[in-house]
Length: 272
Image 1: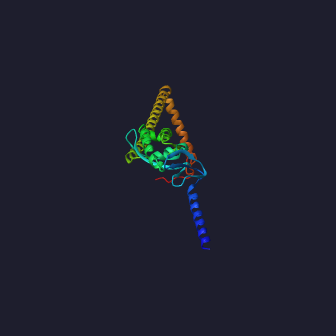
Image 2: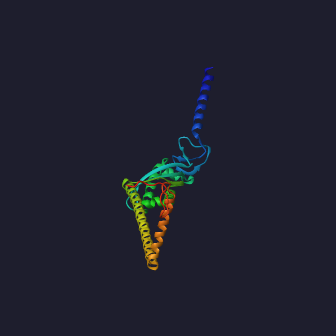
Image 3: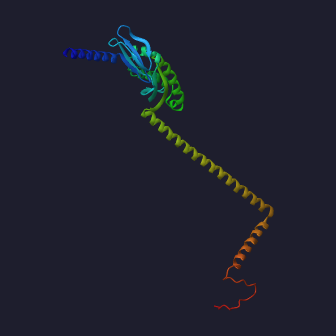
């Protein structure tokens, strides 16, 4: 009986060891991942393992998993423009590794390849591109700046086995001195516009005064000419017109009575 239990114990131990070995010999590559095999005798193999369940030699081989899906990363950089203005730029990069370059990436950079590569090449490219533009051009030609950064950074990252799916400038600010200068320039432009309006208004008023003076002068010349042509007749006409107007106003007054010449009033006024 003891022999049977001893045999069963050995079988169970053997199955446990076999199960442990089998467990260490199997590894899974999930969706969106790829594996690189490190062999203690051959080093990093050139073959990239795809998705699924695979086998390796326990103790001799080891699987290193890489995420090949696009991942975002923000890289802030402080650099200088062409006119020596401090510029704060944040670049948002959507990156992923080239599948065929995974063995080379692991050998040269390691699993944290993005930490080793992206900050350095982004700073290098941004400083080179931004130095070609003035501070004002970085604002007015932002699309061109983004295009050049995209082209140069894509080429630079490809040398390290990285693919950049999207690159965008998410943050662009300048130093305090430049901001104050821009504000002062805006105030000066507003003052200049206000001064130009005042000058134009004064010019229009001046032209109106000249036109009025010319009109008054022409009217005076016409009156003088009329006096010269009509003599005293024009004055007599104006006097008759004034008398008619006075008579009309008096006729409408209730406390005024008109008596023809030589006729006496109905009520005798007391004589002093």
